[in-house]
Image (cartoon, rainbow, N blue to C red; front, side, top):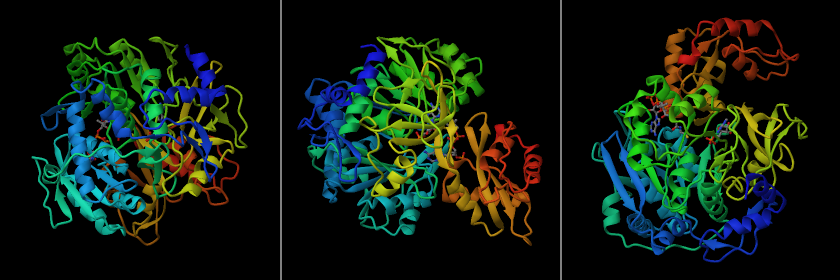
Length: 631
Ligand code: COA
Ligand code: AMP
């Protein structure tokens, strides 16, 4: 069916539409109840369905003739490592690891934190949890011990699975000391830590609570799949919100499997047997959905790439992988493309590879500037599709539709039209739908389709407050945007304190908390400013306590170190400026949006409530000699 009628059906007859899509996965007990509301009044999909996500990703394919097909290809330019796992191999690895976890007492509903680099074992670990009906929570390796500790205390895991080290370009980053530090900071006590030892760096295991991964698995017996309810959580993925406490996004099993399988054909145009590559990290939602679960549930071959777009070894790295493994659909963040463009602006390295296998490129994770989209489109001469989604949705909400291989008009700057199931509205302050062309808050009319977060981990009130009560009847995305006459949506950026640095979602209030804890700092504001490579980078504006004698460089170095140690290197906090005052409204609210516009050298509207106009001039003077775009 063409996009228009598919979309209409998904909205006017959502239950029938999703009941049909649900037939596409192998349930243990098919759901009769398609959409319902739980005791908290929250929408739930397929509530009486019984299934197991690991069964869908592995056992089902082995039982149906895909056992010898590659399921996972591991390509690691940073270690010169390479491995292929067929569906049968992946099932063997996963079911044994599940047996090992079971021997440690992990079972249905227990939480397991996974803090690992991009090695195949991270995929085994996620699937092994799913197999047992346990709930995994993967924490991105770029987060520091404090962030890990926050997640340990919130998820209360029985076990932490980690690796001895990760590798960033040519730097070996030991993980075990970070886990040790996080555990000593956390109040919750973990039973066991399982450590996957890598050849380039072995971790010291201190006592009987710390176990060697290989020895544990060597003695384990494979186990089968635990049937779980569709509404049982598959995973918790923490993401940055507007406070210092990360939000534990819950993903359920049933809606997730149905939505992801649907997205592979509807959005990404792949089917069983195709090779699909999302160049992201399993620590982010893109990695969860499109490195691990969706490609495997759909019977595709997925690629786990432990490398970067550039300098591993060069800016042709993505093209090599695409050509080596015959990738049909490729997904990355615009930053990845900008990094390549910066080092190989003519795209000469691409000429070394035969990319005739590649049919589509999808970009997401941050706003895609038109120049980047046009550059990669011209270089590859295939459709390049910017699409929009977030950790909370778990799969795309906006994308340019493709009907029978024919791509609708791609409008650069727009993330496309609503994906079936999503009613995307632009709202004013009072929650009224704005006319086409007017900018406002991007919200999704309830109910959202399957796959989207049903709630936050053990924080339903916070879920309602942050997402549902802002615009009653809608889910509030945190993004601003507008729609054109053809129904294409343009996402203009976050309207809260979240920023996107190299496609990584971070909270400026988190950083403000750290900066404010420096003894010389009286008050501060951290804002995201435009950056040529990373899209945005954080910059701190600091007012000193009187009588403190610090140099700007000395203070900046302290703050950089503090943010690295407490939040993580991934924050890319590299700039702090001393100012006399921060611009505020009379009620004391810091005018962060105005500061952002000043830093980005953009025109801005001066709010009538501003306390003192001269502060803006001072901020302008401080910013004028900075080249934020090149930080
Ligand atoms: N574990 C530990 N540290 C990590 C890490 C991880 N998984 N990922 C990043 N870091 C560290 C980096 O080493 C770097 O530390 P440094 O300041 O000591 O150099 C810091 O976090 C910032 O990383 P990043 O923003 O990635 O910058 P970079 O200079 O290392 O690389 C790019 C720049 C453009 C190559 C890189 O950001 C990239 O590949 N982006 C693609 C976008 C992407 O995959 N986004 C994911 C969401 S879809
Ligand atoms: P994350 O939850 O980490 O996936 O980040 C989600 C946020 O990234 C969204 O709320 C947007 O602010 C931003 N984002 C993701 N994709 C796009 C896109 N295609 N265009 C603009 N912003 C995007």
